[in-house]
Image (tube, rainbow, N blue to C red):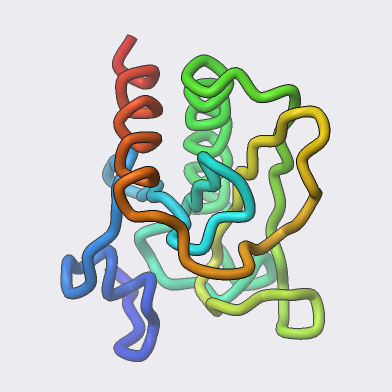
Length: 140
């Protein structure tokens, strides 16, 4: 597995830093954003370290996108948003803050303020409850 010692997402993959996980397979990991732009804001990463879209290998990219689709379907089922934003940033100028390839799923309801990143920490208990709803939807 390709890892970077200085990457927070690599530390999540290795278990050195905790995360509220919602899905995991051999190549990908999906977990809740702790600074959510909305309830249900999730991140999907490759377990291997690639800095951005320009560096990620095709097989890893495909795995991340398939997991993104699977998770989006579960979020739709569990949270019933009116819409979802799926985004991915490349480079600091574009808003990338963690330099490990990842996709965001941000569910929205009519009237929600659109934002790509949260403004501060979410309530950990609420995030855990939402994660459980998403995991239940993945299992059904």
